[in-house]
Length: 316
Image (cartoon, rainbow, N blue to C red; front, side):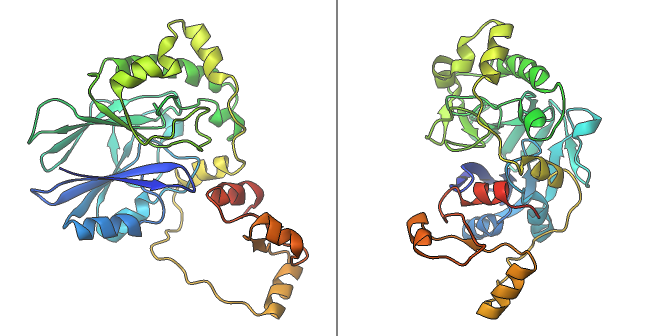
């Protein structure tokens, strides 16, 4: 089995490329939009990307699933759980609780784990060439290291009413599916520390079922009402762009299958653009920006939080 964890520090977001080296097939879980990373990993390891999937409709970044499928000819396998309001609106093969994806000698069993969102699914991996026991669980925004996915984003970011309590109750029920798994199963979540998809995510990239059962606060609460109150309390403010991302990841949209080359602008062109209301983003350190800047420009420092702040302050 081939396994590669890909981590985007600017989004605190994890994606995964998993392959069967015997057949050369591979799957990508939760790809970012910059899909060149996966193409290069597959090329270096003589793998074909044949399957692309997601754990849920993402709100914090624009998914690269459709771009990756378009460039490789891979098949899209996406959740059909959650009811009519939570269906992807483009062609894909639907996944339900109990579905199985087969990639050579590898099997990914689908577990419906609603709570963060109604359509959320997790993938339980078995390397059939080595064992009949599961070895890895890819949880997306269901269970993190030291935390679990927040259920309030649909209400706070997308404007839906009355969804956070229902989501918290779904999450309480979903956790029983997690605790039923063997303690030795490795857990690979969709985010790490710095993500706004939870309130106390750990900084290490992975964990185990057994460790989370004794370490994660969510597994220490047996009372449903107490759990719901604790889960909804003290969640960070969601970035303003989350609602737009959720929609764009659900519907048909133009694909970005190559990285555009930005044009170098002359000073006069910059002035004309500013006059038209186009925003000028200055990515320098704030101390340098304070020494002098173009009037009307906005300072968003080019650090790991750049993408989040850009999405928060700018509208398309």
